[in-house]
Structures are given as structure tokens and as C-alpha cells.
Image (cartoon, rainbow, N blue to C red):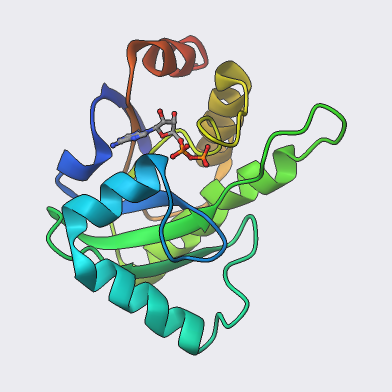
Length: 169
Ligand code: ADP
């Protein structure tokens, strides 16, 4: 059984095996949590992302997919980059948001990571309503077949924390 833990804080400070980055498809950095991870982790992460772009990910990473790199100077072993969907009121993209969580856990299993920290993917620049994103994230982790022992959702502010807390079983 995977235990789900909620903490309010900064994902770059988490001592975990792997932390998940809400990246963009270019893999070359961006704002929000992505910027924070690259700033705190140092240039090794960007270098590893550039190497991915030069090899298997020439066109970048597709929405809903995940890929791992070093965590550089962060207190974790790996960063798992995943690309969340931009929220749309007209089109249901929930399956892609669920896929981010499932694929990140699949990559974590490949690495042998037992503790994994997630941010609230798609809820920043990509505008996904917090409670709905929280419901999808928590349900997907609960249903995933994974050897990860702890999934830690790291919520940056009180509003995000409360949204996730409201969706816990
Ligand atoms: P997206 O493009 O997937 O929406 P963002 O980085 O804009 O990604 O936002 C995703 C979530 O990450 C937001 O809820 C934002 O408040 C949060 N966030 C931003 N910085 C951090 C951080 N250092 N640690 C944890 N969460 C963060």
C-alpha cells in the first residue's frame, strides 16, 4: 500500500528519493515549480534535460508522459519531469492529468524510488481548478499499481493544501 501524505511547503526542500517536476514540453525550464527546481538543483538538471532533447526526446516530452533526470544539488536522487495539460473548460483533459501521475509513478518504479514528492501539477500557470486537480491526483495515486511506499503531495500555499485535504478519503 502506498501512503499518501500532504505537506505544505517547497518541493525543492523535500528529502525524498524522487521529486516530480511540472515541466513544460520543451524540458528546458520554465516558471513556477519548474523554475524553482532548476534554480535550487543547479545546472546539472538542465544539462540532463538538454541531453534528453538531443537523444530520445527530440521533439520534447508529450503531455501526460514522464522522464527522469538527476536531481543535481537537490536533497533527492532524481527529478521526474512530467508535462501536465493546460486546463480547458471545453474539453475534458482529466485523463492526461491522471496520466502524469501514473507515468511518474511508473518511472519511479523503474528507478526503484520508494518516496516520491509531487507538486499540484497543472494548478499554476496551466489554471486547473485546485479541488478538481486534487481529486484526480489523489484518486490516480490510490489506484496505481506501484511499489512506491510514500507519495508526498507538497502544496505551496494554504489554499492548495486545503484543496488536497478536502479530497483525502
Ligand atoms: P503548471 O504549469 O503545471 O500549472 P506551475 O509551476 O505553474 O505548473 O504550478 C503548479 C503548482 O506548483 C502550483 O500550485 C504552484 O503554486 C506550485 N508551486 C510553485 N512553486 C512551488 C514549489 N517551490 N514547491 C511546490 N509547489 C510549487
